[in-house]
Every structure is written in structure tokens, then in C-alpha cells.
Length: 118
Image 1 (cartoon, rainbow, N blue to C red):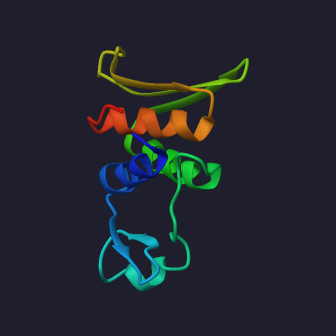
Image 2: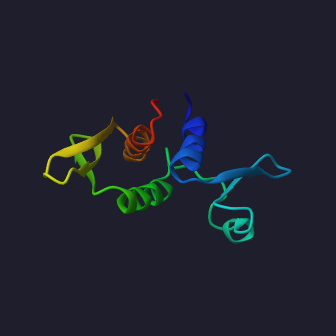
Image 3: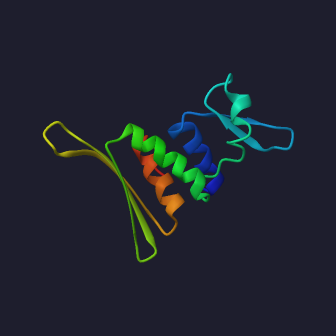
């Protein structure tokens, strides 16, 4: 699976956006049709798998949904862990992404959290 396919999955499955393609075949992402004009300036060519700015939008959304979103970078590798706690303190639903690239590690963990294996 290439980066554009991962970006599209993140936009649709994680962010909950839909895409529209303009006359130049550029993808634009928005949460609803009504909000599309507002989003034209900010979400054109959304690339969370390679652009850290876009990947942080994904992290912000994950932090709102899950109790723990941890990012550790050691020796050039990034490990992203997403998890929640049961009422008794045990962790549940632990999803991980481990990659050379921080944006890609974020994307892989986020996709696992919504049930998509890459």
C-alpha cells in the first residue's frame, strides 16, 4: 500500500472526512459538504503519512478519543501506542505503530485503532 492510499484511509476512516477531486485531480478533504468551502484552504492535499503537520492533526483527534496516545522516538525509530484503561486500571485496546518515520508510525497506529491493518 502506498502513501496516498494510507493518507486516504486516514482521512476517511480516522478523521471521518470525505474527499472531492477538483479539475486538476487534487484531492480535498472535509468533514461535511456544508463545511467544504471552509476546509478548502486548510485540508488541500492532506498527507499525514509524510507531513508531520498533518500527522499532528491525527494525533490531536486520537487524544480526544483515547485515554493514552504515547509517542517514543529512540535510535531513529518511532513507536506510537494508543490505548485506554478499563475501570479496574488495566489497559485495553492497545494499538501500535513502529516505523522509521514519525508520521507513518502515527498513521499505522491510528489505522489499527479503527480496525484497518496496513
